[in-house]
Length: 249
Image 1 (cartoon, rainbow, N blue to C red):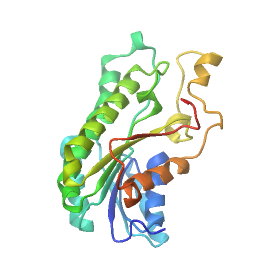
Image 2: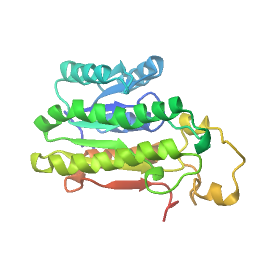
Image 3: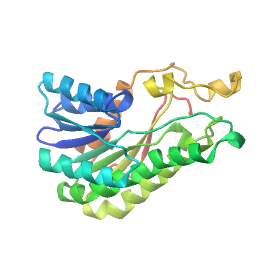
Image 4: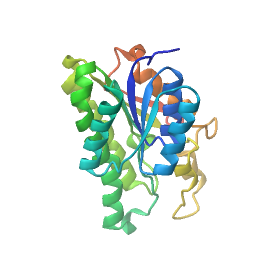
């Protein structure tokens, strides 16, 4: 499929995990990909890999919690690639902490990256997406839909992303811009592999964060992202699509 031929997609979190898989999938479908990540060496490597495969890809370092950096990032994307058809915002931060022990600084960092970062990216991208009647795919989580042990800050941030994305979908529907969320669960990424638990989880706690099919690679989410960003989802907006192996079924 070449659903993104002659189209530009900005992917955040592109240096690893779901963001990297999404950048690879979109490039394989013909997109010019503006690859964004806080880790400059990681995102440089991804853009170089895509270039070797024949795709047009540019790497850009950005802290999504900094609004000025986000504005500069979107401006650079349009300047260097000519337009913007889709924003795929996968950058995020996950940390497990016992709620009554969460430091204010830890809470604020998660909110700044996951929620404010999503807002800044959408805000900066929307003027360009209005020109192309494009789309947004944001990273929510199954934590936005159900309780998560030791995840009060993360769940709050992802619940906010989901609510905000639905509001954007309603606000811009008549102008042709769509906005949806993917809600991954039990996906193998560097972020989840590095997690530590505040305590040894019980069986009941583990079953809330493990799917029946077991952990899967980020590519299973990337396929859903590509569909939502494409014209195959022309009549889908304001939705949250779970990619969790049936964990919350």
